[in-house]
Length: 231
Image (cartoon, rainbow, N blue to C red):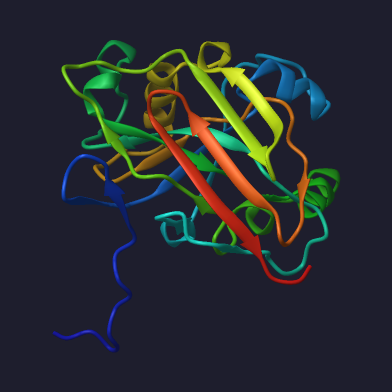
């Protein structure tokens, strides 16, 4: 059997320090994982379980390439996040075993069509068009874990045109990385190549074409790119 047409290239993220590419399987995202962000969005901090949604694997933008301002929105918000890259997976993973599945970490930006998300929430509809659009997941190179040294604290920040917009500490996450992996594996069979965007702190705000965005997770990676195109 042959393909009906040539399949698309496998989305992949460079691995820092190594001449390797990390092939992306699925992108999972966690909503409402910092108390201040939950409050600024009008919610109540720590509900019964994390809020999960997803993006297509080909939503990634790598190597600090420019991101095109998307269509069908006038309110594109930035959300800086720690990204977890998995080298293995499974179902019903125990919290104490969760970190053994982590290949490395990166910093990413979860772009959101906030006006479409607000409309979807109001009407009780899914968030797909608000979250899972083209180029909605810029990501840095992935820093591999060395000597089982995982990250649980440190500065996460984002600036636009040199102005600080978001800054917090990873220790402020409501749901830790092991908790996220364990809970997510109750709903999905996690696999090597999965990326998990772990949520954003407060300070999310609108961006416009022409903005220069810089995101960072201290000790992990930096991400820097331009937002281009007409609104």
